[in-house]
Image: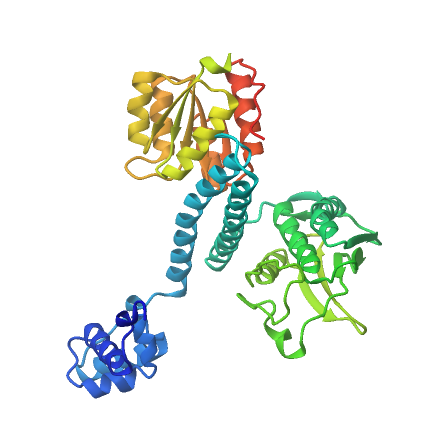
Length: 306
Length: 134
């Protein structure tokens, strides 16, 4: 079999794990103790055991040797993980921008005329690059939000204008699936003090999700409303809704559900988590419910003073 | 004539430089030079005096903001468009403060990038471009 020699046998696998453990904790005297303390040997394959396991190990070793150990200084804190995520996303983003840009210019016959088959292949590079760039953008958002670097540029904005622009953009994709977005404005207020680009990101995400999970030839309702001095926006679709046992994690990072997009679209599982962060940063709320017959609705409220 | 213009593209990422060079070539700019960091950009600027410089912000050896400062010291009228993949308010303000003529996010559409370059060329260099990327 091709490359079969590269795959270690089970016994070899444990030798590798053992070697990894020795490399990680070279000054330990008791080999058995180390294996007990790293309860999941497969974590050692990545050289990054769970922080809980390591904390236990390090505390135990420190107590035995009468030493003090700065656990937080040894394993990456949440803050440094976020910094790392930001750096990785940034360093991935630049080359991807170049790759997509060059591919787009090729697609426009910028270097010379191409055959339709060549164009199709280059088109796939463009669409693949766009997917990666979207994921990078979302990772950057999460990293900046989690490290407390999300800065809102507050200004007065027309909420209905933000929604209208987003509906126009999402209608293009919706039309490809023969889906209609119907807008209803019941709001008594319109002016919002907000970071309009971030609010737009929330509205875009809710609408694009609705399009993504709606069956073809259905309609999506986009309703603007107001309640107790707050401006609201609800999106109602005719999709499958969210399974009961998956409801609790839809606003969490990478909180993907088993529901599949209807047109083969991609989902990073970060969009709704980012929405929640942005809405909360504005002092607003975000919620969803499955509708009695079919589909579900997502609702955001923004305080008008925010 | 836009074809008489000389441009300098500064970015440490080769893919990005190639992309920007292709955008400028489609606009009809006649001479396009490249530098891979801010220091190299200053040296090339001194020797070649490009009409327009497109400068990345985050680069090794010398970053784009320092390079912009040096270029503006050499020629206060230099036309420099800053490029970045991460546009924070700080970067935009620093660029404006140190004399950048414009600012463009690298991940914007190529049409938008073309528009910004065209706008800058016609505003600062009094040259009209009729070329189109798309």
